[in-house]
Length: 457
Ligand code: NAD
Ligand code: UGA
Image (cartoon, rainbow, N blue to C red; front, side, top):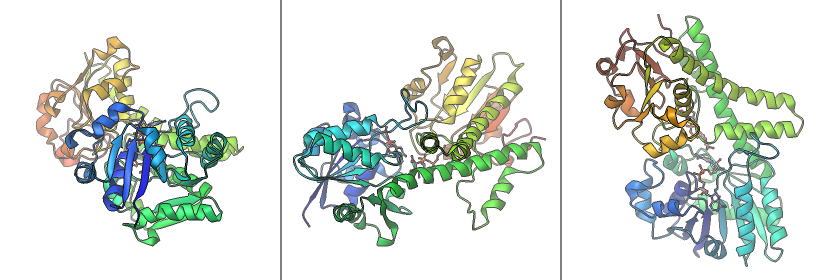
């Protein structure tokens, strides 16, 4: 088979791992991953133990394919020029200004890519929308391309990504499905098939779903909304459990054993984090309002309200218990939004710590993977004189020394294995234990601990 040239714009949590797995499974394809962030590209080209993204299994694949059929480069225009297929995997954050501020997806990065592709192309190309974007984005990309370059034929394909961080490599190697949406024309079908051919190198046909452009775009938003909705549903019940005699673990297990409901994504928590659930639901809410569907907008908005409520409840427990303590000190265990990633975007730890610092608590943070500079950057809107009350610690023991409360906010395996009965001797009375991930079994605690999301008798 003739080698195919692929370019991926965006070397982030999606672009990096996705292209590594494609390169590993498709030796006949040459892949160049480009990014406007030069230091990110040099990190991708640096030692495999210090890649910009921590993802189990990633460094082994990079070591195998980098410099062979996978290249990380700053030469954006050149890479676009020689590519047959271009994946757009840039970030699509919530808008911070203009119409739709705080709700709609900001498509500036995608539009910039479309413009650059149009300017740099002299031969036909398939443009793949890998970023998560609202319904209609594919059409928008096409209109930018056609306006800026009428000489070249472009086909737009939507191929949303469903990987979850921390399990990205396995999710890419063994996905539940790969979704590819295209235009309903002969050329559109051909383009969809060209993209499906990439995945056919390692996946069976029944895992590949072919749809139209709009179904593909909406299915991605819908999938994230459904997942987040399950977490908010179980979290809403955790509040009820704390008022009654019910235990949330028992409720979650009983509900999840109904095969029609299923057990996944029913783990109660301090609230979901990550860069996507909130932004994608806001996007869905905005889209519903745009089409005059007020009730639908409110329905999905409530998923976010419960998530905020859960984080507030968690903070209130600390505040209420330690309100009379002198120089109250809190240990935050975990900064990443989930285990096995160094990503802290929208992590519950940020909001809880921000509130603690703004209310004069002393905070000691420990995370096995997130760097100190990231933690400080995440708190940049906290006043400088409050930041004096923050210490980022290099071990769990250092973080616990002389503190009054432990808050487990990431489900790192390291925390699950800890003996908190022994560790509590490093702490000061009153001792508060808040397990925001519900990972520590009761028999590992003694009676001086209070537990979030279970009855405290
Ligand atoms: P990210 O911020 O980690 O990476 C995006 C990269 O794109 C950045 O390195 C940025 O410098 C680069 N970029 C932005 N504009 C550019 C431009 N004009 N030219 C060149 N480079 C540019 O983002 P991510 O987490 O990889 O997410 C990317 C998209 O994938 C988003 O739409 C997100 O919703 C979606 N998604 C993310 C995940 C996830 O787990 N992170 C999973 C599925 C889908
Ligand atoms: C999520 C989806 O799972 C992916 O399919 C999707 O591709 C991705 O968003 C995206 O579009 O960005 P991710 O955010 O990486 O992936 O991680 P999840 O495993 O979904 O966890 C998200 C948050 O929910 C974490 O804070 C996690 O701790 C929390 N969570 C998850 C719970 O509180 N309870 C659960 O039962 C499951």
